Image (cartoon, rainbow, N blue to C red; front, side, top):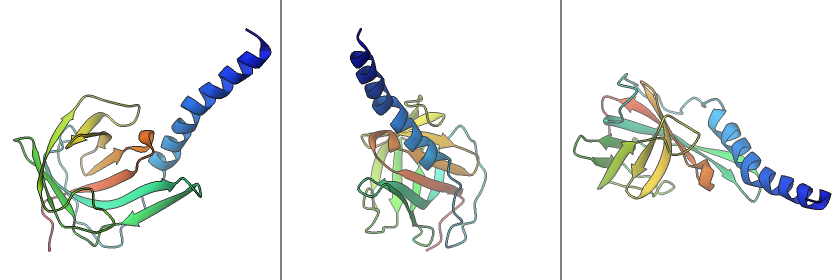
Amino acid sequence: MTNNEMNLLRKKVTLKYFLPLCLILVLGCSEDEKPNCPIDKTNGDPKSVLGTWQLVSRRFLVLETGKETTQDFSCDNIAYTFLENGNFVVKGFNPEMPMFSNLTYDFNYGEKLADFGNSTLRLSNFDHPCLVEKDKMVLNSTYVDGEILIFYRVAEVLD
């Protein structure tokens, strides 16, 4: 293999693996901002998504500018309730978060998909690497230029 071929291979490997890894590390490990509205978190099983989760924020990278943007949804009372029958119900709506709204959808919580998180959460037909803690859940789709969604586990969401 010539030096030019080695340099080209090195650049391809860097672009394919190093840049996405940096993006995940920068977006996934940055400190959570304090929500604009208080949320009464509750503790639960860190191996389960069952129960109610309030959407706190969404972080994403604006590819044109390279800047990270955070949107706070803590005041919007958007809740995802995951049921034992494999459905989840979304309560609440914000036009800037149109992915799911006030309907019932299917989900599957299972094996690890990517290098982030401890499992995968499939919401309808899209897989999210997922990190579940006793009172917090992070869905990280930056591996496909997606977003990071942060939820807090709650007993209920007030209107």
